[in-house]
Image (cartoon, rainbow, N blue to C red; front, side, top):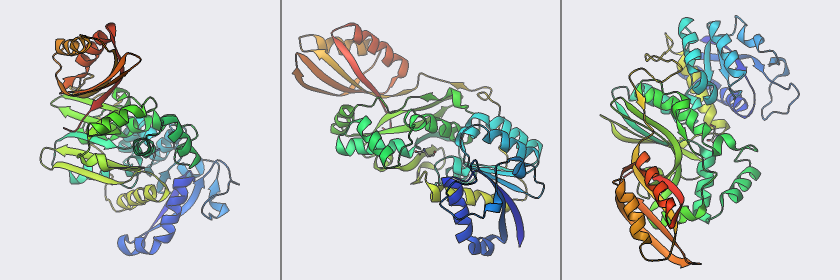
Length: 425
Ligand code: HSE
């Protein structure tokens, strides 16, 4: 049996999950892979912190070099989170020729070029299944199982916190702030929820996923990002009446050499498979030219599901003769020859308040018509204080044309209250 000496960078929720899974699954790992993982050192910030698992104190260290520079340690597994110092520690481990397994989407999305180049230069392996969608094997599926495909589109619910919040807002009709507070009380949202609710977490993940799917680097900073903190429960209710479910989607599409990559609240038809992904579950719906439509679904976060992906990567790395490296040019910029558009096409949900008087509807439709935008569905509610609520869904239109039309509408007797993109039809 091959003994692999391992160092952990971090020992929080995920670290303890990995420790637990390695312990309880040890015999199966031996039996299936003929590999034994021996954890030698674990980097922690606080030696005295109470942890979910009983970890021998002599393994703990506060010095990263005890792991990254120990010649006996062959594999470094990182779950510290955050960009730094995690990136520096991983780079150091790779420079020393060690295999690195990471669950850190932020460090990877922002520094993939450096990490990958260092791994390649030192013939070291870099594995990151756990960085995107926890237990769902979306990275390996994209790299391996779908390699005979030109993937043209991906749409994912890849942040559990926001999906939990939107699900409850939709089911209960509750306001965003009330559900967020409750999710924080239950430990389902972070005390500082910015990364999740403003779409950063999903943008890191779609940058990684789309780069692999399109076989071309799509850096984080080209991803358009809009979170859920301004979502009004009223729009969720109107959308529902019209047959749509609101989700925070991460979307990446490629049409020839033009890419769009974006994270924003999105209405999808109730019949779309992503519409039934509730609570904190994740799912990625994709289309490949050969495989056609496909959806991967499962637990995108949490200690055990993330540990499932980490330990799977450890085994995958241990069983490979040569480390895997993507063959596309992985620089810190969009791949040469590609362009990113901010003029993507989709349908749009628009809610307006308008003076309840003759000619207002004609004015709204003429502003849209002027930009070549056609209305698919329209609903008007009885006026309150002389103001009518008008909700409409357009046919496919360009993002830039919509903004021009809405600017024009706002100059007249109507006010645009919400704009939500609609996908999936
Ligand atoms: N905070 C993330 C989520 C999990 O809510 O899905 C880790 O990426």
